[in-house]
Amino acid sequence: MKVGIIDYGASNILSVVAAATHIGHTPIVIRSSSKLDSLDALILPGVGDFSFASKEFSNANASEKISEFASMGKTVLGICLGMQLLGESSTENGFNSGLGLLRGVTKHLSTLPGLQKKERIPRMGWYEVSRTRSDSIGDLPDKAMLYFAHSYYMEDVPIAHQLFSSEFNNVPFCVGIRDQSIVGLQFHPEKSGELGLSLLKKILSSN
Image (tube, rainbow, N blue to C red; front, side):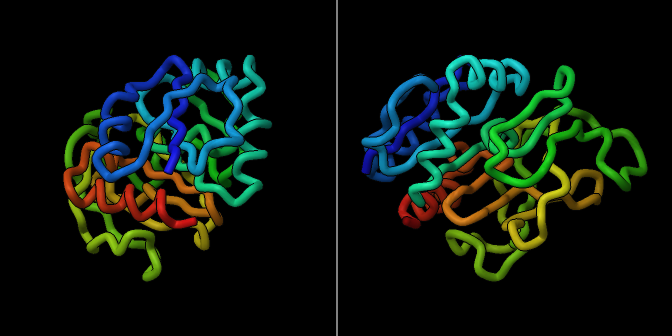
């Protein structure tokens, strides 16, 4: 299976390449301007700045190309920043538009409704993840420990599209989204051990 991993100049892609190889796929690192027709799935990896990545996509007309790819029913997976880019917009370094393939807007964790006290941001390390739906991808065990590294989160995600949730200072928020063949994960499956690799394998094999 050919899995395209988009290098948009703002992400650490080596761990995603290694993970895709480990689970038996052929990763192909591509620039956002590359043709996508020959690929079976597409990954937008995490780490980086939303405003920079958004401008890179805009300059390369990548939004239209990725939308066309998704319209064919092929899997598009966004990890961490990649999930946020699949959404509608972000407030990171000003207002910036996303690809609009998932419903939801990205905001700083400090604005999470219901927070009672300040917590250290970025939120980095291993945190519990709970299933939001009984049919969640990959049969991930409830309250699985997975790896996060983020300062922003996505809100206003339709309940029907929410797969997983986690908590920040006891306040739950969405960390997994699926709308047909488009999937977003706020955590890093490629850095979450065998559980993460199993989930990644299931997502990439879901079509």
